[in-house]
Length: 162
Image 1 (cartoon, rainbow, N blue to C red):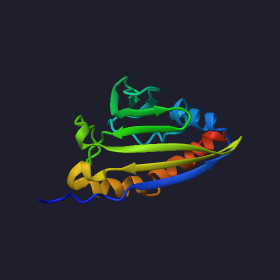
Image 2: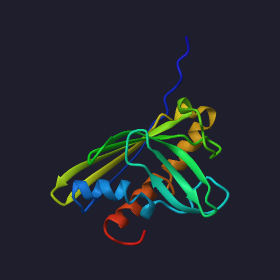
Image 3: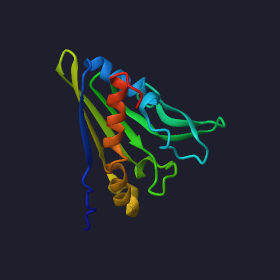
């Protein structure tokens, strides 16, 4: 019997000066305000990044030409503490319709005080993407990946343009 190796998850954390509720709201309801415009899958520019606020909801891009492209689904919705998303994007940066071939992102929000929140993000299960999972892990773990995304998010929390 063979056992598939488990790729190490990508982890990133940031502390923001905001209440737990505001930190969660800016991450989810304000998702479009901080998501990098250059991070899209369609060949045309992205107009809007959308995260539907419910279990089973989509997270996806809307393009300037009116087209849409799914990135995954909301697996867990526990405001203001936790969010889990499927990453249904293949290693060649195309939509992956098969949920079994997707990784997942868990985001936890922990109050550090009444107006301070720690946000911990873990992107895991890259092995489910198959042979290209390691390259995807490197991409989302690099400077233009989740760490940079959380910095943009923190700027949005602070009311600055990311």
